[in-house]
Image 1 (cartoon, rainbow, N blue to C red):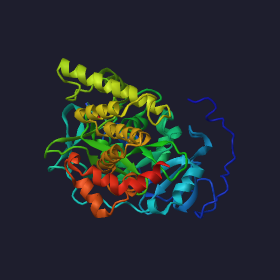
Image 2 (image 1 turned 90 degrees about the vertical axis):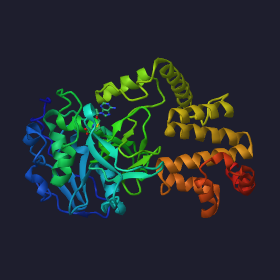
Image 3 (image 1 turned 90 degrees about the horizontal axis):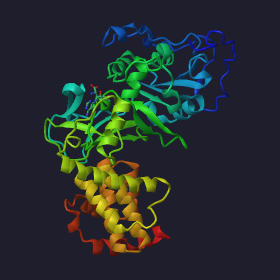
Image 4 (image 1 turned 30 degrees about the horizontal axis):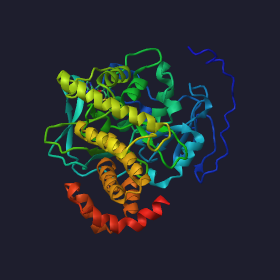
Length: 439
Ligand SMILES: C[S@@+](CC[C@H](N)C(=O)[O-])C[C@H]1O[C@@H](n2cnc3c(N)ncnc32)[C@H](O)[C@@H]1O
């Protein structure tokens, strides 16, 4: 048991001054939402059934609409953690963070309303053999198509998602105010983590399934580990055919198709850095997710595997030098980056190719080569459409920079072979905008 856990005499149950227009209620100990969530829920197996989802006895209701509960200061996180349940009538999501962040998110009106479910999403969830469950295309899917969009069930500040799981006390309180349906969905997810004193069942589920959410509305916020009931069923592949991206505007996780898929094909995402050798990828997957990857890239014949490793390693080196804050490493040439983009494309690594595309675009801009700038801009905008969809802020911002009418932009994007585009015409059309943006 954590030393001093029971002897903690701290009775200061004050919460910071409420700046937000949140309907704060008078704070009394044990005043927790009268949620059906307290009733406990049926679980996948006996262990899971034994968990009783109750707020810790000194969690306090801070606001009823939206429902915010200030965590018991004796919980492992200390007094900082708060739980925001949204929407209030049927809480399908809990947002776990320090109170000021919870308040900021609670003020953000759009997330109080559930996102509209996709009509007839093109997949089913079924067994994928030794991998457990997986997502499979229920019809042909086209590159760039939105496969799934859904709200997370659990979103936590990273400092609160790495807490030790002794007796599950923190997580049990965090999940207590969720609707039984949401809590069940979370508890039914796979737990691939070996049990240790610090990694119990709930934390194991979170570690196995969490995907990153970039909450752009919170300035300088880190990436929030987030758990989704369906998207988290997607298995890993070192050449995935789908891309997960979080949309802060709708507060939804989204899955986009990176390649055309046939009916019955498994829908996969990348859990780890894909611009890396097979040995590095496998080591990372084994450490974090406890499986040995046997995807088709990991099972290539030796010669092709060596070539794939060589390409991915060169790209990894380039990306690593970019991460040091450079737009492109000193001495990088456009031809070199375009060659790596071709490799990434041939490897089927769309996200990697798009990052290289941005670097190539910047190199073209620095060289004042208008035609190359336009070519790279078209490449980058096409990748943005495939990876994040036309509604995304990334795509919209890039489209704005193209300064084309919707019709012209449509022509640029719908061209199945960008090589046949009339770049000279485009360069002429875009010259004034380019001149402005490089100033
Ligand atoms: C987020 S879950 C994916 C969905 C999971 N298969 C299920 O049944 O819900 C991640 C876990 O699925 C399994 N998994 C995912 N991709 C795999 C792969 N390529 N090979 C083997 N197991 C995999 C591993 O146990 C991993 O820790």
